[in-house]
Image 1 (cartoon, rainbow, N blue to C red):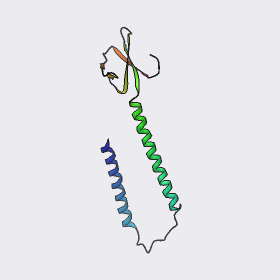
Image 2: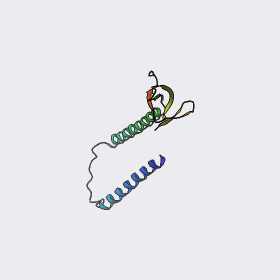
Image 3: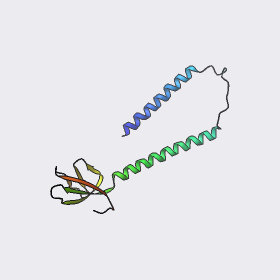
Length: 127
């Protein structure tokens, strides 16, 4: 995961440096340029940039927390035998459920047979 972030940062820095080098090559000499007033005062522009940055950081933090909380949620797993109709309930974390098996809260590995089906119920809902 950290490598994805580092690669993204490297691409952004490389693009910034490339665009900056191209723009410096196309600029006329400083004496020939006409000075224009900025559309927004520098203080307001800086505050807006910090505001956007704060929103991005808070949004990213919330997204990471939400994903972590969802993966660690406890769910009730019902294993239903298709031939007999027998239901066996287990409790497991959502991150430990995958494919045809799961790991229960007490550490047991459960693998489903071909005649068994898995039903997930969020914690707090009845069996």
